[in-house]
Amino acid sequence: MSDLKELARRVRMAGRALARHGMVHAYGHCSARIDADTFLVSPPRPLGMVTAGEECAVASVHGPLPEGVLGEVRIHRDIYSRRPDVQGVVRSTPPKAMTLGAMRRTPKARYGYGAYFAPQPPLWDDPKLLRSDELTDRLAATLGNAGAIFMRGNGLVTAGSSIEEAVVLTWYAEDAARVELEFLTAGMDDVGIMSDEDIKSRATWAGRIRERMWDYLTDGDPEGG
Image (cartoon, rainbow, N blue to C red; front, side):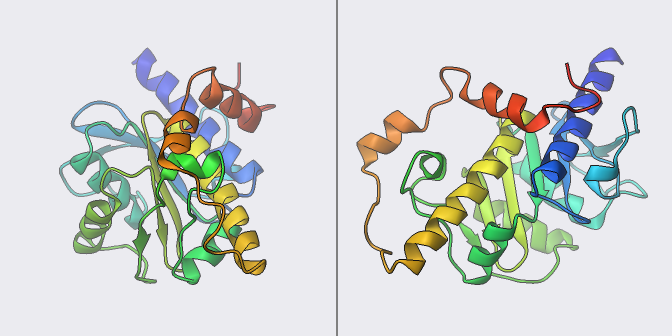
């Protein structure tokens, strides 16, 4: 039980961090895997409004969503089902990623943060809300082994080895979208792509890269420390 309480604390912190840094507003949700069969999902309301100690819901990786859980949490379920390596999922609405997805584009590996999604994240080319099992299963299949998927006019989903990593990847993907849009504005679509060797050396978590970004994003959280 103490482990579940600790996981819920991290999920709540993740949600508030996403809201604090403009990655979500009224819409968005995040989750963390409990075990092979279950995961813990954020409360069904704006993540920035979630209070310390607020209850998170337990959902099944294999079955229907429990009552009261948002319909698009199917996305999380189907990613966990297909990807045993994934321990955290974020569904967010960052503004630059929203713009790039609406353009039917995803960011190329042009610099450090973009390297984590090399050669570039897949695109889910369907603007509908994902509220059916058929759609979310296809989205999870389109994600494949990637760390993020951009959705056409509908935001972003990231999948990480922890809830912390999924949050960090959300921030990285949004910044990669910003850089991509600036390259496009400058008419430099086909320049500045990192080499495979540079991507391999740059897309690292060594040196507490993930942990430092998590500390930055959650600084001042009421459940921090």
